[in-house]
Image (cartoon, rainbow, N blue to C red):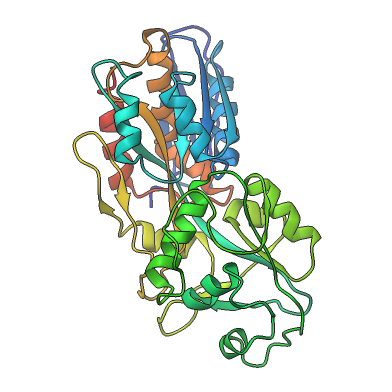
Length: 360
């Protein structure tokens, strides 16, 4: 993991200037420079999973680079990709890589090029729950898939009880919550169900919720709020939202020697083993949702920043490259790691920075 000291940014006095972030909580020092370049404003949208990360990055970047602003709106991965392919925003955030049809559509706005995926935010999806008296819930792929498809409807169902011997599971109806918006988080969850559900999940993995039953809410913030308010409920959100809302997260029985907790360290173990799926300047990754490795949490995600490899708007290109170079830096990754995200392996961020340098 690319871990460095805490971020400290001083304001840039003018365009084409560098600001340095340095410090060291463990006694060592690390330095990462932000090249502010030309002052400019970027508009972006998409994944709500990375909203907290964007809040950190855009604040730090604006403070460092006088006259530059980053406006990031959530709305979900699907909405972000749609706006990007309509030419309304400079980049989109998506918790799943572009599909072939989306790449084809991007060629209309990326003159002479196409949309590409740059992995930027590592995270995990917590199965968050609100059940009185149950503090250490364990679930597995088949059981969680059946819960979210209304095949298992009571908390004291034998399948849940078998995974939680000794737990005082209530004889209560399970209230599930899923995303109402098209979400990459939903796609990653359903990919996990497809890979590790033992056939219990019969729907295609995708951004739109397809299963039976349950109630919906908009965005990660929306489903988090519902679980916090509604007893005997369960949903899925990124670790940052689970932590912010003080929600309990289930451990996952993957088939390893013991259930795996929803921690950044355990997610990092899985992300570090991701395989390349993209070609050329597209850096999409393939995750192993069915991992049984010790200490590897299977419900992980990568949020990509989607940009044009060629055909970016000339007036914002310099700011775009400067901002993304910062977010992929050791300092940028460390800053969001302190907010519940998973810093990407340096082998990944080095490739990302290599591609950013070539954007045109």
